[in-house]
Length: 202
Length: 223
Image 1 (cartoon, one colour):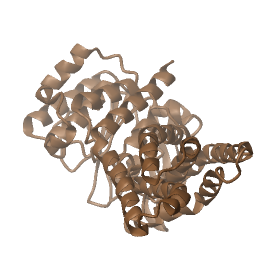
Image 2 (cartoon, one colour):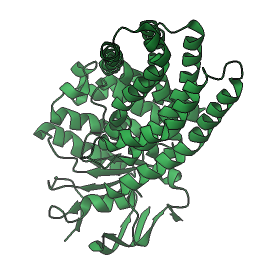
Image 3 (cartoon, chains in turn purple, orange):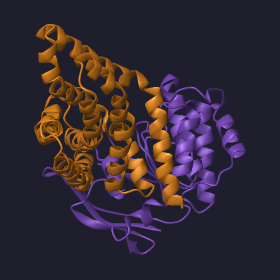
């Protein structure tokens, strides 16, 4: 269980958000909604300890995450709103790098099957820079399944995706919550997922 | 074991990126040779003059060529967020910087080692000086890699002023030039200078991971 307690963040004296409380239990999916610039991405970055909050604490399984940050990171897959795949490397190189880094035990056949589901198998040896933005986004989202972590934190996962990919992503979310996973995402698109909890930013 | 595997993976990725970007390296080496030609044409065909100032020119141009690729040190990985992803998988920024310095040393500086004997031919340098030059370059380029790392991490958020990074590197590389070129003047007593160079390299290798990691963290907080 991820517990966020009384979180406030200031950027050069400007208040971004204040006194935010949130608890994410196993099998829970939460969407952050709000206008552009309302601090959704900042909130996700504060949770990931990439930005430090002014007040408040974050607890993972009863322990403050600052005590052992790598223990917390080891449970997380973070998909940023821009692409983190290296433009000059091929799709397969990127996938192998991520798989190795997160010591994933997904077999090669399973990876290929995954690529086929997302319609990316034909680009296996193509450099990422030649893919369309939707395909790059799908490659990013593959990390969710490759890394096999419990908490998924996503920033605008629905950008650039076509209808069938949105369908697959929603199904993936449902599967993950059924397996006791925790999902927190910020998006302007409102997906049709059951039991979706919503946190409004203003 | 998993940790060593991650380090191995990092170098595998760096080597792949190196082979995809090998054109950059060729253009740097081309810059190095073309500037030597320009020097030779500008000074005229006085063999004795070229022989006496050749070493200094080669060293300064090596330094200038290595500042050319400064912005590539962290910028791509920083902007795309790969640095954060690698960090989240259990590698501290300090170790990341250290690995990056080693890969810069191997993949950017070491190819210049091959071009040094060719450049020395153009100045008709004696063999002993060429050996000294190559030896001091191996130590000196490690210092340059550390300096490049520090200067590149300082300028992660700087999108306007492109020359300031080079200025930082050149300022701190003055001792490297003094001791590297000085090695030919002192004759047989060159060991003391090599010790000083090695000492400098160890100091910079010791402090630059912490300095660069601090700058990277600062840049991430202000991105």
